[in-house]
Image 1 (cartoon, rainbow, N blue to C red):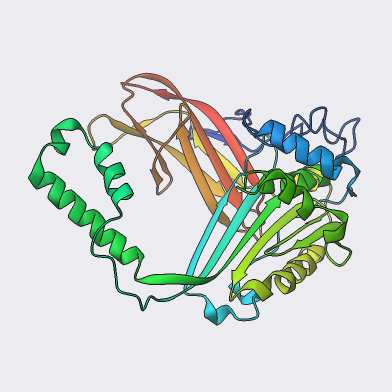
Image 2 (image 1 turned 60 degrees about the vertical axis):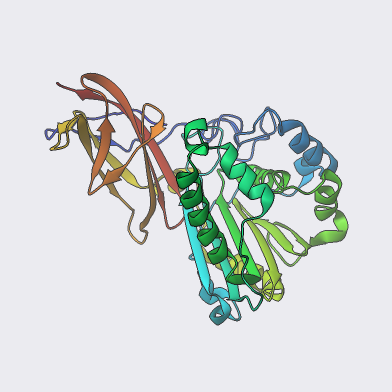
Length: 363
């Protein structure tokens, strides 16, 4: 994360100085080392202690350090359902963006996830009661007072049953998931494939098999794997994971090839040029009072470079997620003093910037 470097007359601090380092575990980019310097430890991502041994084991067995790398950096291309051969089959769509699970937040990486499903009406009779195990679990999470109130329990379970019935009105006959990561370099992009698969419920042997030589393809990316229902590849610093099932099973490879072609059309950048593609963030130094008792706000302004748009903004106060609207970050419960306000913005090229500043609250 970057600190404030300049203050303007309107008490707005512009947090847009270029970062001097890539992800710490990758090495200092733009100085003595190559953007693809092998990290001192393996992971460029936030790895929980309980899963790190599993990821390490997979990485060693698939020999990820021997995977091909390049010095080319790119932003993400535009991805939408029109890339599918049969987009009309989609009945439900969800898209999310964020800065990604990087170990160091001073870099540029971002992640986009696209979720497409086809739902059809369920012809089977709808359930008339909740499953016994689900009902017991719901009641177990109630306080003793509420659990001993028969009227409350009856209404509570009635609402839960209605929601459960609605969830059974339709069934999924096809799904496709697309996960795209802009990494700081191709080493980290290679790691991302293992990072994503390592978090799945598949046994380690199945994941190693998915990255085996028999699953390699020369027709996708710098390195690519086709292991139904998954297609995974890296093109330079862009990692792509596709999972296609049911009526969308045949979409995986054609979609991967289209995305790969679009990535190659993105301009090849230096690390400094990629930094310049980050959004600009301006954050005020002082909080402002609001009409709501005990609540204050701090003004911010975010803008994207030409040709891009802001697709995700997230705000935190003292490490906790908080609300924001109309250029104002909400600060609740703090009467006086200083708080740390952090903003993360991601562009349509999945290039992110995270900034943090101390904001003064005057009583």
